[in-house]
Amino acid sequence: MYNPKSLKAEEFIDHQEILDTLAYADEHKDDLELVDQLLEKAAQLKGLTHREASVLLSCSNPEKNEKMYALAEQIKKDFYGNRIVLFAPLYLSNYCINGCTYCPYHQKNKHIARKKLTQEEVRQEVIALQDMGHKRLAIEAGEDPKNNPIEYILECIDTIYSIHHKNGAIRRVNVNIAATTVENYRKLKEAGIGTYILFQETYHKESYEKLHPTGPKHDYAYHTEAMDRAMEGGIDDVGLGVLFGLEMYRYEFAGLLMHAEHLEAVHGVGPHTISVPRIKHADDIDPSAFDNGIDDETFAKICALIRICVPYTGMIISTRESQSVREKVIRLGVSQISGASRTSVGGYTEEERPADTEQFDVSDQRTLDEVVKWLMDMGYIPSFCTACYREGRTGDRFMSLCKSGQIQNCCHPNALMTLKEYLMDYASEETKAVGEALIQAELQNIPKDRVREICRDHLEKISRGIRDFRF
Image 1 (tube, helix red, strand yellow):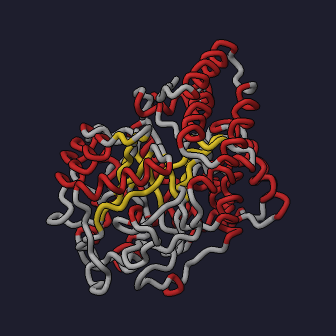
Image 2 (cartoon, rainbow, N blue to C red):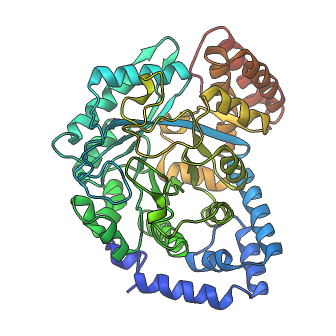
Image 3 (spheres, rainbow, N blue to C red):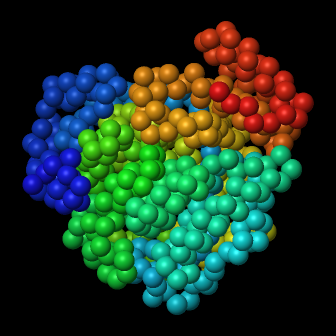
């Protein structure tokens, strides 16, 4: 029986409720009066339910779809302005005991080179990332209690935070590791992580179990209930995501929104982020083997509707997607992107991009400097800000500021100051010229005189070599 307040996976992601939702959407997808009512409701910035959202996803009317895109763009501006946060993944180890059929790290893949970073290798990877200008990382590791125990992950986090090279510093470490215990989540919280991220892969239980035939990840309930254990362990910022292409996208979309509704109902805090990866080619993985792939237009609509339905969440898109796809969905709701990513263990210290240990093929292979300039050329502010996490603006505190729109009073000037740091320390001359002009123009968009003057003062100090100011 469907119950968003339940702590049992099969009750807050109820299979029959999703089937009923899809049937309702099919029945009402051409009800343009209802579609207009839902768009009017969404314009109040309070979001939509999974059932309401599913109607919009099923609607194929071109005029209404354009309205959805326009609304998504407006909601994105209302909550996140024109800022785009940048981060990079850091792969620590590809040892894994699971049998996931869509991931080259699966245990039966005998020809992939297995690698686990030593602490010195972690240090070298982090220095390479700092030398690009990154301030925020998402660490990744396969599930292997022997090779990648929680103690190893904690040691790596400690190493990452300890490295200060020239003007470089990683100020926030997000963690994307397998579902674990409340006790281990507590340890991650104590280690000072930012967001705990875990992709569901698929919310369809029967498909989930087939796609994960062996290993601890086979346990659907344990995996799906991980966010509740993370919250219990004190981690108040969690990130959801499905791997689009494994199951029918309308089913996944409904399940994803139901999970967000569940977190809100139980913990009073919805997902800090939602990621939207699509399955891609990798070492021994052929994406065409999964017959549920979605085209770029459907993908863009999903991104727009997530922004409309969960307006407060940060939306993440990785370098799995091409420059052109990223360009489209940034406008429709994405607020965080990776840049210059390497999805292999030890990849950042390699001169040539290594392919033998990549988790997936990277579509957008530009340098961080190229990505920064590209964003600015489109009118966005590339942000390396980590202030909310470091100021304790997490969980319900962040959500209340975000939902009220007040968070922009901090985020906009913080974005300008972290961009200034990047320009001073890492940017090419061409990127620096574009960035300096952008900062001067954006200063005028800070509404409060006092905040604008403080920001201007901090920017001047940054130009003289002082670092790490934040509101």
